[in-house]
Amino acid sequence: MTMTDDNQATASAEGKAQRRTLEAAATPYAAAWTATGVPASPATIDPDLWPEVAQPPSGAKAAVAGKAAGFLFKGAVKRLPLRVEYPDGTVLGTGGPEAPVMTMVRPDAFEARIGDNGLIGLGESFMAGDWEASDLAGVLEVFAASVDTLIPTPLQKLRALYLPRTPRQERNAEQNTRSNISRHYDLSNELFSNFLDSTMSYSSALFPLTSGPLASVGWEELAKAQQAKIDRLLDKAGVGAGTRLLEIGTGWGELALRAAARGATVYSVTLSSEQQALAQERIAAAGYADKVTVALQDYRAVEGEYDAVVSVEMIEAVGYEYWPIYFQTIDRVLAPGGKVAIQAITMPHGRMLATRNAYTWVHKYIFPGGFLPSVRAIESITQQHTTLRVRERMGMGDHYAATLRLWEERFLSRSQEVGELGFDSVFQRMWLFYLCYSRAGFQSGYLDVQQVVLDRREAQL
Image 1: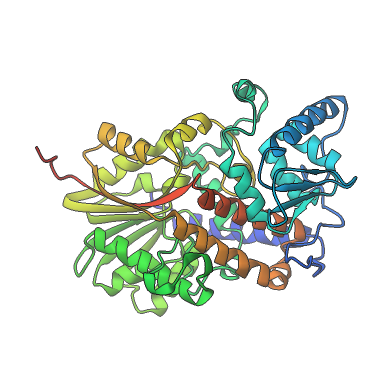
Image 2: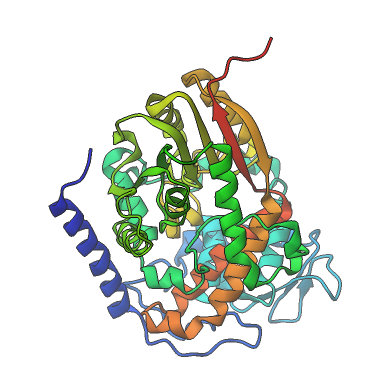
């Protein structure tokens, strides 16, 4: 279902209006950063913009839940390799002098938030400044590595009874998907350009061996590593001169540009009007407007036949219950002999099953409707619902950790520019938490990212 020009204009206007509202509502950005580079704790928080961050939960129920959560939290961190420092001088954790430090500023507010909202409260309490960390990713990595044991097993079984569920309007049915995508990708192209490299690639890079150790790879290596990632996917999908390529998830157009430079004809779909506009500008400037079409369209509505399908970190936005439709759509439009190459963030299968109905901080503040697959889920769904089969895959989680570190450093260095766009200190702390939370997942091994190649070849006997 291709949107009309009027629909596109309305969608673009909505995205710009959303940004103007954010800019108008944001508290004046005071360029006060701590010595460690973390955005300073906000002196005041706009309750209209941040209703559940401005004040911690209150009342008798919140007090009881907070005390219980505080008891569980202290019991958990006592055995973890970090240091949790309280205002009264209490220090918990097994970490030595070099361990990451979590500094409690307002412990009562912190406990009330996690008592009311679990791990959503952990993120909200950081946004509010209830706790600080000089090495935020390091603290979160400790928690990510211990995610299965933070809460006692008997209580884990009760989580579904009191933790929030995904709002119906955030399920990725066709009528909701546009809104879910817009809430993240239509924030501002200028925001993303402040921490992405010149390719405007918002997915894991693939650093060549010549880049050096991943733990210390520098910013100057990022753009060519993003192009290396794209080129490997295009190679695996067999994209060359004359290829009819479908790209599901345009981003800001770098993959389409590189495919067109090979002589392919590209049809790329996105639900972000901001991304569509900038991608079209970049494609026209490069002289490939006649080779690339960027449509504001749901992947489910794509028609036609394509020799190759490529999709980079888009399956995460599809939603657990819609993965069969995603792969069935690819199967439906793939020409005989065609190949598919996707890049997907993955998680362990057991954790995927345990959390598929959870509503998390990332859902609430970053990616509404999103969910990460496991490799096993991709293999199982394609076997059960399509003629596609996984033929090859490559894990590159360490490369994502390095990519996120570079984004984080760049974002911190552009604090003034981000503030001038109208994004206040609460937003900046939220975005930093998101980047560090993600990096911690890859550094701990809790998350991975895979390049997966699929085709329809008959299984060998």
